[in-house]
Image (cartoon, rainbow, N blue to C red; front, side, top):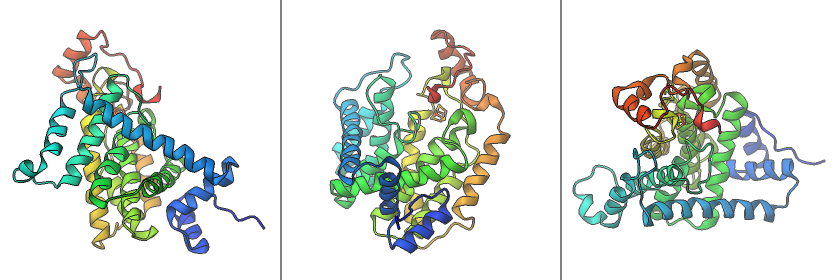
Length: 309
Ligand code: SF4
């Protein structure tokens, strides 16, 4: 009989992990093989190509920093890159370690590359594209990860994304930024935890801790552009993922199980006023600064959904 690897929620995912004696990434790989009918070699090649996009995108922003056409973003990548390059000096001043600083750089560089129309990997969306790359970029250095381990991280993160997409949403227009950057931090937290050798349960605790921290987060992009607050929010989201993973690795558990956290996120999204769901009609988008920039760009009160494009 053909084995089944399809799951819709964390409970089913954990059942597969136990029944097949597999980690989350292995179940996700088999899920993909089952659904796509591709060979393992093809799926891993696809993932490898996407990993290259992640690193190329960070590299592009670091090597060629430029302001975005709106003039709102582009300055942060060189500052973070400088700190990473000269971390021994910065280590005395900073509270976070080198891995976290690299994670912020990876996340912000991805967002700034996107704002300059560079190629990025929308993982899970363009607006939240920095968190997982940032975490991979930071963890690679600290944990001396091989390419295959980074591919495993992408698979673990995908499994969490599948659950959130099935139960709630990954769209800021539907559920606010909790559904975008929030989901990305949950995906990255599980990926980071599993690649460090922790169990599927511990990885899901890390995801729950990360997502709970993001519940209620508004989507309020200035001028409807995926720039402010999106890019730095990704940078700090990457560090949240690391904190959630560290907590879970210490044995701290989420009191509320992951499936319930995701359902709560969906309910909060349903309650959100449309003004804070990608319409650029509320929150930071309507601050005097936000309105000034939007007016200058001819984007005042546009009511668009940038991440849904
Ligand atoms: S557009 Fe909205 S949902 Fe997307 S990253 Fe920006 S604030 Fe978050």
